[in-house]
Length: 162
Image 1 (cartoon, helix red, strand yellow):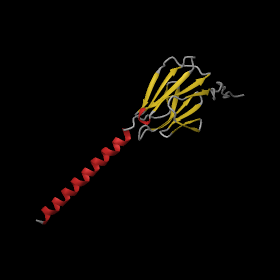
Image 2 (image 1 turned 120 degrees about the vertical axis):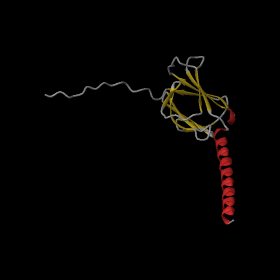
Image 3 (image 1 turned 180 degrees about the vertical axis):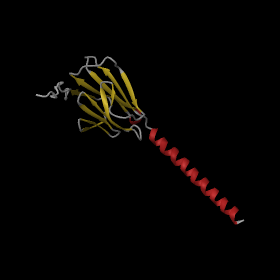
Image 4 (image 1 turned 45 degrees about the vertical axis):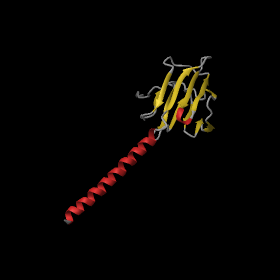
């Protein structure tokens, strides 16, 4: 009789632990995805400059534009990217590249390097070239090409004997 009572108590304890685990797991997974991803569109402005448009509906962020003056465009635009699944960075997007992302809890943090300008998308603020700005829907920020690529230098190996 004692053994049957012990099994009953263990089964009840296991059931309670399993129930708590399932509810906690579901709650955490829901929190991870409830706000949705950053949506970034790479396109061309009316005057021919590259433009990056950022939207995040759950945070009520819409049409925040970054226009890059004096930059040239790729022909594979417009392109819209939703940052939902993490990838190994750095990787190319539009006319820039993702140099960091943490998408554990969406929308997460995404850092892009576009024409030498570092743009970081955070839920609380945006950071442009290490300066913080408050999100303002409909805002346009004009950026200039800050770090042109260095000239290619070809060096010859000096492996010949004299």
